Amino acid sequence: MKLAILGASGLAAETADLAWEVGYRELVFIDKEPVLGIRQHYGFNVVGEERVHTLHAGGFAFVIAIGDSDLRCQLFQRFPQLNYVNLIHPSATLAVRQEPDLLRRQGNLVFAGCRITTGIQNGNFGLYNLNCTVAHDCIVEDFVTIGPGANISGNVHLMERCSIGTGAVILQGRSTSDKLVIGSRAIIGAGAVVTRHVGAGLTVKGVPAR
Image (cartoon, rainbow, N blue to C red; front, side, top):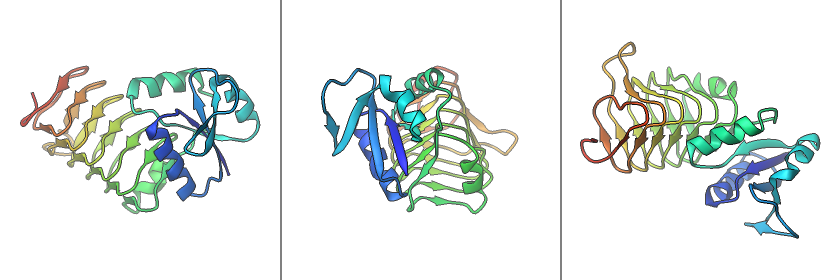
């Protein structure tokens, strides 16, 4: 199987390892800048974005391995026609009904140790980093980033392009109909403990987060 990874950073290298774990053997990184000559990243070739359409025509699947939610969204808007796949690490744990739901979406990256329980509505192009957890009855919209070791409690609504920092904790919403909401493009700082709604575009940090 052939996979092109949009991005050429450390996260892209982690994504290559994830892809290898699930059976991809022909891998290439795509950098935003033109690449002159032969360049490699962690043993795989790096090409410029001008090669995207050639790779697409050659049967490559694609993922976007960029941590910034806005940049991930912008890349998809630039290349909406590509065959974006989901990658789920074998050590990730998904409730029995969650994996089929996730696989109906596109572009999600679920890294090692991630735990996703039940009753969750998944979006597209989510980044579920190492050892994060998402508990029951959450809504995860498109282009959400969940950092390593972050814990999302039950009845939480993560709106489009929000970012949850490393080790942050989002406490549980009141009920399935009264969820704790993290607004669109909001940023939750590393290690923060969120106890109430966070408005769109806000950045909060600390314990409790403010």
